[in-house]
Image (cartoon, rainbow, N blue to C red; front, side, top):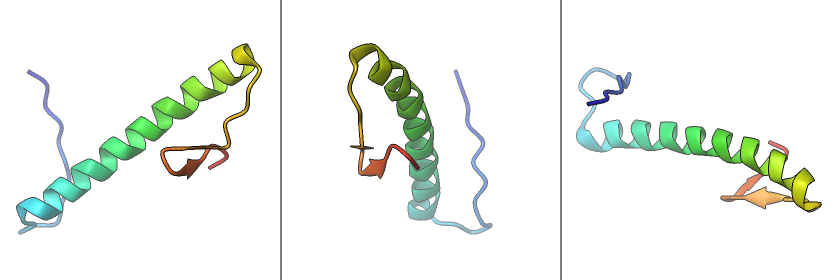
Length: 58
């Protein structure tokens, strides 16, 4: 089993803990997607301006 340690303010409720974890997942996904998009843009000869609501230049 895998575990993730999440740092949240003491006394944070379930909603706050979930928001912190969701934010972390979004950042991980954004980083992974950026790397994949960079590689595939060149291979396919296309350009991606935005993905998941983010600019690919961010």
